[in-house]
Length: 205
Ligand SMILES: [Mg+2]
Image (tube, rainbow, N blue to C red; front, side, top):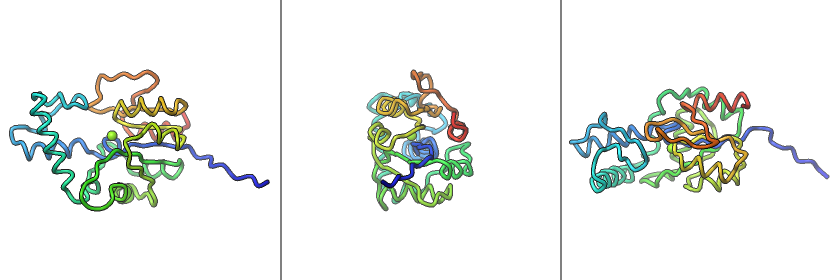
């Protein structure tokens, strides 16, 4: 009986926003433009509820809703994000070449092209990845189990916890960010950024 070859490459799940793409600063710029009383440099978004805005929950929700309304109404919004500060584009390309990298993202659907296509276009444009595999889904745990990740990185603690639970053998890393400071997760080390993560994967640690 034929023996089908196994792919020896490491399987990696890599979040997009605030790991490879700088979403937060764009979000803040929009908030700054729409709500003049708020300067983006005053933002310290300590958590996912944006309590760092220092606003009442109602005002915070108004700002968040307003920014999201603008994002959803922007044609191909996800194609124009800047690269996250510090990310080495060459290293993204190198990791993608040497490992099997999937890009799971919970990005919202905005005007224009399919969000997966926008994201793949962005990866190709910025990192020269020829055929990036993007999954638009908020089900990061089930994806990790189905795709059999060996490594995973995300800036959102909830996603890291879900992936670790769904795929315990996966080495999960929390990407350091202003909005996840103070979060300590058992079995999930913090890395300063994508470059450190890529080094760990490439060295097989
Ligand atoms: Mg993210």
